Figure 1 (cartoon, rainbow, N blue to C red):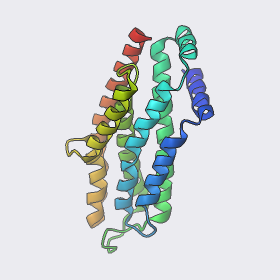
Figure 2: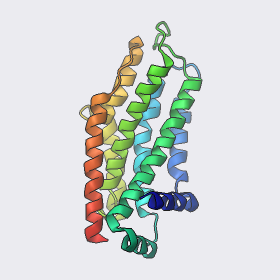
Figure 3: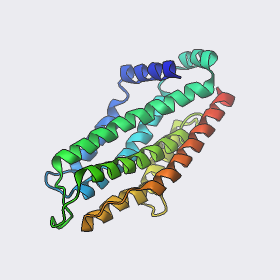
Figure 4: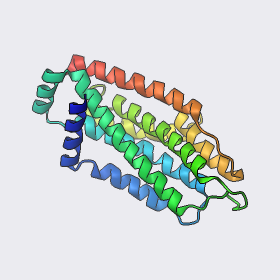
Amino acid sequence: MIALLRYQTALLIGSHRWLPPVILYAAWLAIGIRIGDPLLNTFGWAVGGLLPATVWLTRVCVTNEPPAARNCAAAAAGPGRVHLACVLTAAGTGLLLALIGTAVVVLLADPRSNNHQVAVPVLPAALAALLAALVCLLMGTAVGALSNWPVLRSTGWSIPAGLVAALLLLVLGASPANAAVSGLVTGSLHGTISAPWLPLAVTALIAAAATAAACALSSRRG
């Protein structure tokens, strides 16, 4: 698996197809983050942008390899393991974006509540933000795994499905991603920090099930 991850990472870097989702996330941060904004509220904005970016990264990774090369890798390591390496590469890239986004917010935001009266501890807030980022990252990975090959083969269906799912998961109250982001934004009102452990646990199960289903299907359709 380590060799497959190295191969997929090298393929992703060499293809330059990582640029659009990374630029999307950078633009998201540039639009929504201003120097001196409340820390937790700004974390909520930064975390939310990870979901569509990770959906896009997952699509890039699972469709990046030429069919002939994919068939060779599948013959050597198994189609399920190859597909898992693609999904994990996307998740690892999303995690790197999450760390960068967290660092940017810590550097630029004001560690206080919305009214700038209540001090917010930076390290606990950053930890809560990273947990919320994992929620959005894992949810984006799940959406990307289910909205692309081998689950959906047609680009005409996969791209709109991924975009619509990412939007709904950010705005619907029942979504773990919405709960994680809302926890940061709501906490910013009074300067309180709440770690999204329950949304993280639910999302981890969803992402694991979605990835397992996609890998199993890749073995049948590979």
